[in-house]
Image (tube, rainbow, N blue to C red; front, side, top):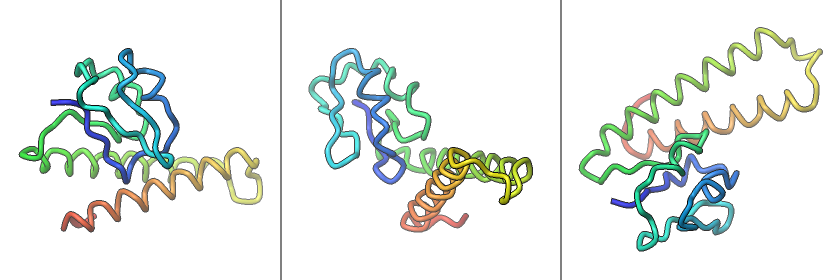
Length: 121
């Protein structure tokens, strides 16, 4: 089964595009799209994705995908809490503010995805 992109988690960073040895992944409107016929299931794209937006699981394993989304949500919340504890709001550099905003946005997207799937967070 070719790679599957979880669109709600894709941040458009293009790491997967660069990692794919077969050039099977293209960006469309800032979201990765897999050309199934070219995908050789090497999993390079999945390993390169720092947002957990790529899977090789079929629809019959959506429960496992949901569990992975919840796991990623917990990781992001922990990272965000740690950043906030180490960097009081008045001392943040612009790059850290962007990092915090990115984490908050990804957390919102995962929560929305889980809510749409009927899962609680």
